Image (cartoon, rainbow, N blue to C red; front, side, top):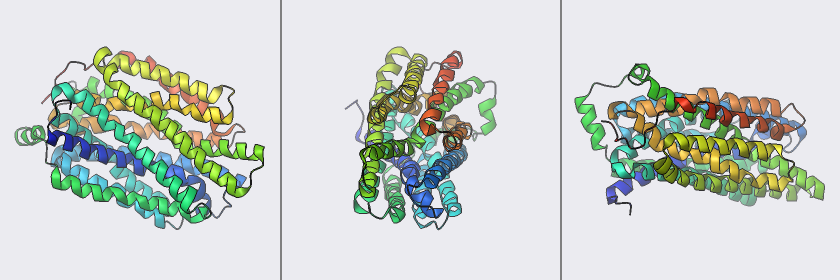
Length: 433
């Protein structure tokens, strides 16, 4: 299929699992936040004080995750060009798996923050190594398809997190919300098993081995040299716009769905147990709607990039993202209809990320590929971290809550459209050595 060898499929599958579990570990907190935060702060789950604290701490912890992700992405991108793609993947996967599982034993918010920071460093570092490895192993004519397929694992990761949270918090421990979140965090250990499989069966790409032997070691400062400055700016700006939109919309999805479900439960006079079950069901439905949209959007980057080019593709996705955000959070919709509008957000805000797994590696030569791709894809998270923090801060203080604040996130993809003249087109280019 696609003219790939068995080993090329193995490399793609290994990177696919690495990135899927990367996203899996990154969003577990967002699912358990409505139970985790009140428990650690000794507040009654579901109370007005708990809701306010959950919004506030979801913003803070998501922002800290993004900062740690940015640091890890830049650091391990550089390390990936020095010690190799496979070793870097192993190290980062172990790091985020152990950091996430340790959250299960947090006695207070401070320890939870520390564990999330450790996990975030590994989460940020894995992407550059995996994306570079896939780009270097795949045939030139199949790089776009392989890159998009690689990112479909994000849907796998978020779907798995959704399913496990529903089973653990919504079924197995539905009557114990004070402890259910700890079992959800323990699922973060799953990627540790996958990491050892990567180390056993995947070797370093020949492109990297040749470059490591015959080229000078990479330097981060090279990204800002005359030769690479415009390429770095193009990759950075596109990733920045996409990151701000994705994280502000996705970080508050479980909280958003929880608020809608609680409103619906109050209208129908449901008791506490029925309300808790409805909350978990709506969190699951909202996330699955977002994921399905994201999967379709990711796969659509293949024909868009190959037929239209990278630059028109980004413009189309940002235009649809702007319209979908304004509609979802601005139109007068019934709670359940607003919930299902997350399909449109997933199609655009989530789907556009299918392009970065091939676009960013295309910008840089082999000796600088993981450093450049890691920098562009991750450093923007420092700025993107302001998004969830500001949404959490304002949503906890204004009467309209998350819905009213998230409406204004539609301005972010609008800014992306205005930046299109700075985008470098890479369609038809061979991967540079």
